[in-house]
Image 1 (cartoon, rainbow, N blue to C red):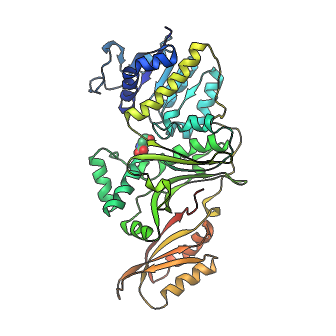
Image 2 (cartoon, rainbow, N blue to C red):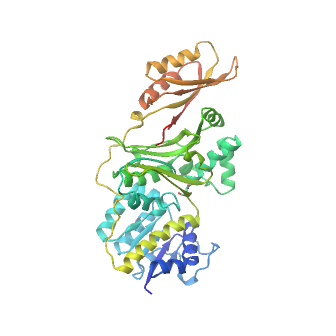
Length: 434
Ligand code: HSE
């Protein structure tokens, strides 16, 4: 039986998951592949930690070079994460003729063009199924299963940490900080949660999906990004009164001359399938012109689910090596030469939820609605509860479809009024997810 040797750089949670999948499902994988995947070397700075998997001690090394310069290794699996030295290692592996498999979404989102150009130059392939949605086979689905479609829209819950926090805030009526602390204690959030809760990790994943779906070159700076740290239990309560749930969504729409790409807390109908995605689970809702709406759901992180995606790339690459197929690329390349025209958030039109913190005085509502009206913003409904003569109270409005720039200008004016006692909260609404 033909044997393909692979090298692993990064033996953390995902690395251990890959090893476990390769070991436990070895007979199945060999039968399906018609060959054997041999784990030839593993590089990590920590060789002592118990990862719950057994590997021969002699294949372990602290030196990534031992993987990169070993001519017997056909595929280098990069699972260390971060930008450097991962970028340098991947480029070096390619230069020495190795195919690469990676789960590194930040690297692909920031340096995808360079990495894919190198793959082309050196005649190697790069697998990145694990970079978006953990175990959900969304990359292969977009590149192959949905290749016949013009993609109309993508709505993704792509960050398990944020979804876990929002789910618990909703179920337990607790504040962001309190749930975050608990999530950190339970291992669902990092000590520094910025990348996850501020929407950056979601934007990395959206950049990858959008490049595949819309065939454009995506600059991360063109994606509007807002995280969940300013969401309060009050917003969650009001949103449920209006019949909505709040989710951190990655949104991509390609139905016009420009592509819309944004990441922000979004109010979506409580009955929509995406609203039922709870906890650390991920889901991607994609509509194509031929297929209509589709939804992919599963575990977006963790050793075994992400290991499942990494091993799928390995089997794919090894299959081609065994069959002697060279240069088979997927039908949709990750990097296009087509410069994408991406809509600025000011051009985006959505209904908005606005929560004002206003003094409860006669004329306040008419002042606010007058300014909104002057900026062409229509009000669909208003909620004001409670009465506090001296203190500010929440005044909540749901607008009709409004242009981002109009909301922006109206709120600058409203926020500077004496009767307004805190910055107004804005949450965009997607009421009609096709
Ligand atoms: N940190 C990510 C999440 C998992 O919370 O979903 C890896 O992409």
